[in-house]
Length: 638
Ligand code: ADP
Ligand code: MG
Ligand code: ZN
Image (tube, rainbow, N blue to C red):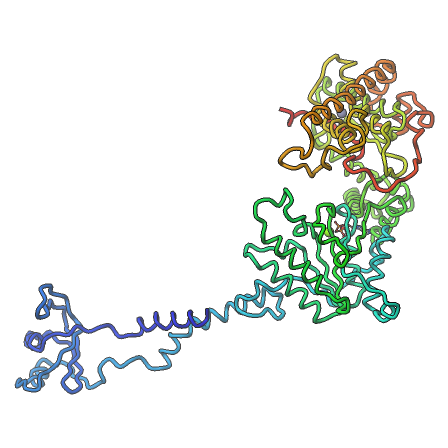
């Protein structure tokens, strides 16, 4: 590149540096011009005469038909010429110079113009590429593309994240600490013949603290820590990803013991040749292959550990997960009650709390929330307290912030009395069925203040963390979700668009019951539907057309049964429905105690209360959000 650039530069500049060409004219023509007194000046060496005419004149070279305009000329004086040229020129007072004719530009000028611009350009390139490489050893002119962009955390620099900043995920911390320990004292493990895993894969829902944990490892490990997001390997230029991987591992090996952290691994680690990767994603595949190759290249004595994080370990390429690569897989699950309490404690360290703040209560009322949510909750509460002019954050700042996060921001929307009444009955329908259905989550809040997209909200949450769901509970959820529409039907004999999101929820739960959880007799205990969010664009694979129809009819059967149940429950409890709705119309918002009182139900006698404190299972069932029955105002229901 450099040589080509220099050559090009030289050629172009020599065009500019070359003196303008002179037109050779015949000596006779020159003489006529001298006689016409049209010669401005001349230079002469031996018989060559070069010079300039005062005015351009037309000259037709011998043997040519076209004439051309000439002002700079050169001519040759024949040795036999017997004119008195010099005195003629003197008479016309034409200056006669003895300079060497058309000397080339001085050598320093040639060099400067010939190579200067190229050298300047190259210098600029080097400078830019160094800056892009973070001031470090950003190498060659264009070679920095293939360099890894990994950030190197030096053991002692800046404010460190430590394990003290991570709360509520002890088991995970334990696993990771072991790795850190190994890197610090490899001898302790080697003596016993133990081999440290090559790779540790952290997987879990977003916001559970995977990246945070990795940063804590960086802070604690006191070994070089390279951190990169998998998407940073991929560039528009093919082959760059693989070369970046190579570079990253080379760097890490050079300074071993060290840790490489690859965040959001699913960006490149997706199973090769799967439906989602159709359409030639060679670059991603090459990058993935390179990672596999590098990890295989470890003999275990290098002391390089690869830490990776992903939100979706189920879509990862199986090759990544086989022993010898990411052979240790750590699931980071959403925190339980104690975990949430501990995370709240971490994030309220720097927040002045008023004496009445009940962090245990807040932890109890936030089931399903992950670390990032809790951090956000604390921040919202602090913002709210500042806006209200408190100098400490009070408990009601927390509860109001929680309400805002869970239910949405209040919208200044005026409802007509008609709409308001409808919404009140709709929400009362949800709430009453939530109180009457055995096993349902207690009703925490009912509101007919419009928020976000919703005209009204009923919020239910379990008293303790739920990890698995019974068929009866799920049916209760469907009945509760249909309660809004059922109430409208019972009271007004009419239906509105308001139930759109309820119906979404209903079909979602019912389809999963049939297709994924084996809860219908006709389909039986087989999964026939893909997990939510992983539907293939080509429809259902491996499911016979007859089965698809059966799925539909089974879903319909469940929903129909539940709707009939909802209608009959509401009809038989009509007075309670009316009293709840009227109370709601008066106050617009009811919390748990008021709501049960208005419906005339004792919370501890409510069938819904029976199921409190169920035995925890493994992990929360996917695809079941908390029961927030929010009414859209139908704007998107066209
Ligand atoms: P992800 O699992 O998606 O990588 P992050 O690690 O980025 O989640 O978490 C986002 C933020 O949430 C963190 O910066 C931290 O402030 C907070 N957070 C998440 N989990 C925890 C936890 N277990 N303890 C303390 N803070 C947490
Ligand atoms: Mg992350
Ligand atoms: Zn509803």
